[in-house]
Length: 191
Image 1 (tube, rainbow, N blue to C red):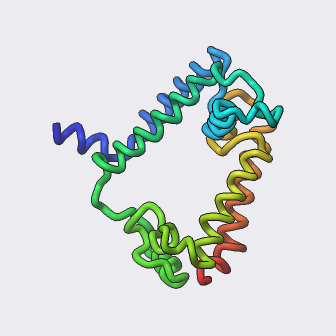
Image 2: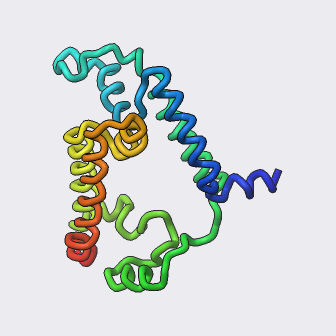
C-alpha cells in the first residue's frame, strides 16, 4: 500500500498525463461538450435562481451536470491529494529564484505551494494581502468572464477544438502573465 501512495504522491510523467488529457478531450468533443472549470460558476448561479433576474443565467443547467460532477471531483481530489498524497519535500526552485524571492521579502520560498506570508487570512487585512487576494481575485474573475472562459477551458479544450478565439486568449494569458511578472510584481511584493 505504501508503494502505491509513494507512486501517487509523485508528479505523473508527461507520457502518462498527456495521453489521459487527450483521451478526455476527445471524449468531450465526441459527446459535444467542452471543458472549462469557470463554466461551473454560471451553472451554480443558475441553480440558485439567478436566471430570474439576469438572462445570462437563464439556461438549462441540467445539461451541464457532468461539469458540476467534474468540479466536485476536482475539489475532492485536491483535498485527498493535499491531505494524503503530499510529499514533505520542499518545492524545487533554482537558487536565483529563491534569492530573488527572498529579496522581495518572501519567507521560505518553496516551502509551500504559495507564499504563506501573503496568502493567509491575517494578511487579508494588509495592503499587500488585499491587493493579491481581493484585487487579484477580482481581476481573475473579470478576465475569465471577459475572455469567455478560463485558462483551462481555452488552453485545453479550445485549442483541442481548434478555436481561433482560444488561441488568441491563450496568447493573451501568456503576454499578461509575463508582463505582470516582470513589470508589476516587483513593485507589489515589497508592499
